[in-house]
Figure 1 (tube, rainbow, N blue to C red):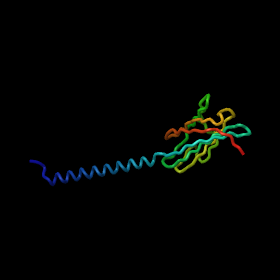
Figure 2: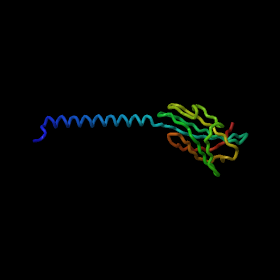
Figure 3: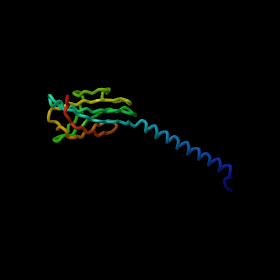
Length: 146
C-alpha cells in the first residue's frame, strides 16, 4: 500500500510553500544586512603654508549609508617613519561627534606637521582605521600661492 495522490499533492505543496517562504526571508535578511554595512568615501589632501612651511593634511570622510562608524587610528607613511595618530586631542575635527560619524555625515580631520615631515610634490600614502574597516588615502603636499 502506498500514499495516495491527494496526500502527495498536499505534502509537495507544503514543501514548496516552505521553500519559497524560507528563500524570501533569507533574501530580506541579506538586503537588510547590506543596507547596514557602512559605505564611506575617504579622501586626503595637503597643503604647505608658504610662510611657515608647516604641512597641513586634510582627511575628508563622507558617510553615505549604514551603521555609525568611529575613527580609531590614522597612519601616515613618510620617507623615514610611520606617523600614527591614536590620540585626537591635538587635531581639529569638524563634523564628527566624539570621533563618530553617523550615516549621511561628513567629517574633516585637520592634521598639522612641522616643516620637513613630508616633501613637496611627492605622493604619500596612509590608512584610516575605523571600527568597521580600513580605508587607504593618498595625498601630495603642494604650496599655497596667493
